[in-house]
Every structure is written in C-alpha cells, then in structure tokens.
Length: 267
Image (tube, rainbow, N blue to C red; front, side):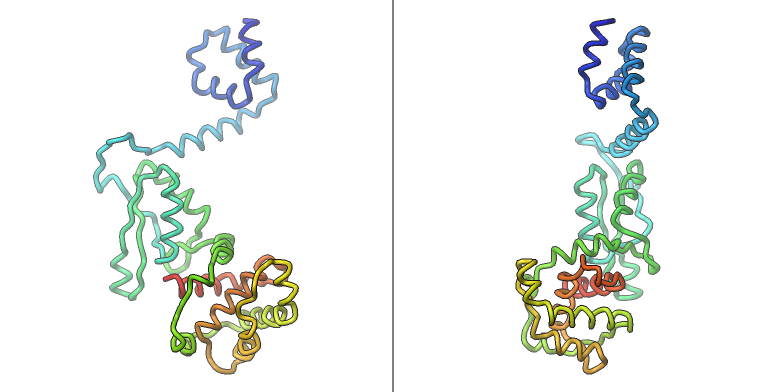
C-alpha cells in the first residue's frame, strides 16, 4: 500500500477526485481506504466536489451518441420566445454547448402582433442544462420574451461597429416616430454635454474617433423637446453610451434604450 500512497501523493486534486468518483469500484477495500485517507489529508471539500461532479454530469445529460435517431417529440420548447436579434445570441450560446436543439419562427406572434419572434426546442433530457445556459444571459421579460441581461446588453454595445451601418441621405434625415422618457432624456443630455466638453480627452484615452461630435448640440436640443429624432441621432446616442457605459455617470436606465436602438439597426 505504501507504493499506492506514493502514487496518489503525486496526483493533483482533480486526478484524485476522478479516481474516487469514476474508478473507486476498481480499487480493493484496502486501496479505497488509502485513497480516502489521501483525500482527507488534503482537506478537500467533498460537498463542493460532489456539486462539481453533478454539474459536469448535467452538461452531458441528454448528449446524443453519434448517429442517434431522434424524433420531433423528443424535443420540448423553452418557456419564452426570442426577438430576431436575441435569437442570434441564444443560438450562439447553445451552439457552443452539447445540447441538441432547433429553432422555429413563432407564427403566433407574427400573425397576432406582426412581431417576428422565434422559439427554441431542446432535447428533453438536456432541457435543464439548456435552461441554465440561457438564463445565465437572459431574464424573463413581461411580454413573454426572453430579454438580454444588462451585462449582455453592454457587451453587444461595446462590439457594435458604426462602420457596418449605412443608409441614404434621405433615410438619415427622416424624422422617426419615437420619444424617450424624462429619465432617458436627462441621462442622455448629461452624457452629450459631457462629451462636448471631453471629446479630445476621450479620443486620446480610448484611442478612438468621436464620429458624431457635430451631432451632439442638435441632439441636446431635441432631448429638450425640440424636433424629432433621426437615424443619425440614434447612432449618436449609441456612441454616447458606448463611450460612457463604464463611467460612473452612466445611468443604467439607458441599457434598455441601447437595447431598443440596437434592435432597430440590427433587425
């Protein structure tokens, strides 16, 4: 047994736990005792280790063997639906997991409300893990849709590229039928004024060009209730929020403003 003790002493904690949880039955009763003594000597938290094992097991639950045949009834829908923009994020999340799934357009909301939403159907045995993955990034909205959590909205904002958005001069100047709440107006006006004063500093610190500097004063005027908003104003707002989203002056009320404008451009 001394040789076994020496071997186990060289194992990492993970290797030791793998032996305990996956190959304990291969050990004699005396060897099992040696293994348990080594685990006790290291003061390994077995409750936490068991939780990790269960979590790993959940990830592989419902994973299909290569060539396995499944039927439509083997899948169940997630509770809520996704917008056209959010389904791209959800698809990326599940694509990187081992959860079998498929996506369908939700004809019910399209017929009733004219909204384009999507359902995700997951393999029933993998449904708990799929829900866990989705709810790490989405919360349940009041309108029967999953909505991105604030941290994910900021992530999408940071990755937004102004170079990808193009429209005609006529579209750029078109007045859109949209308004913001008093809280949004105040938060945006404050950031716009800050950027007017700090543009040169921002460009130096963040190593970026302030694309919509010339739009800031007209935007402030519109936020005070003069005239309506255009697509160019929307881009200026996104730029404001992209620049200040990690600044203490950034008001979280703007996260949903950002989400709506991103959806406007990306959908």
